[in-house]
Length: 183
Image 1 (cartoon, rainbow, N blue to C red):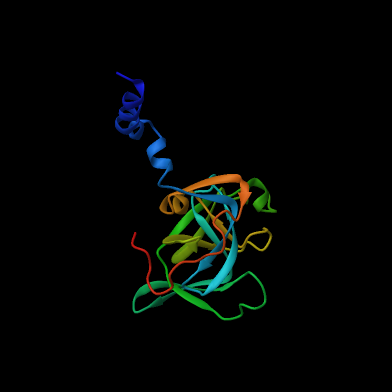
Image 2 (image 1 turned 120 degrees about the vertical axis):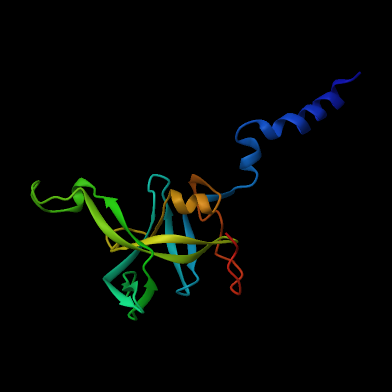
């Protein structure tokens, strides 16, 4: 009996059960930075993928909560460039409590809050050939290089592996615009 048929049998039977090997084949590799298409807003933005952040954040200004037909909504302007001067309105999904960094506030230790409250909306986001509906909190990110930060919750929904040595590994967004991919 030769070892070749046995090694093939071993591969077929046991490799799928080795942790990580079966799952890695199903995941898409993204770089540290990617292009993301916000299909709800018809806008392509540069995004930073951050496995250390839990939530996704979009750069917004003049954020106001209001009621529409008794339901909570949020109105905001994109804080990306001067070209986005029209307000955007979306249903408010929830309010997120985000831990503040020590350098976020120029205030005394007594005034300093440990958390900040941010409104959260849902957006359809396309990276590469994959589109997902993700939760995005709204905050002014003009001090940062990327108007969109995609955290681990959204990365999980994208079945993403992040290779920090790469940039734009998924290429330009190329999702079908007629239908949202099922969740």
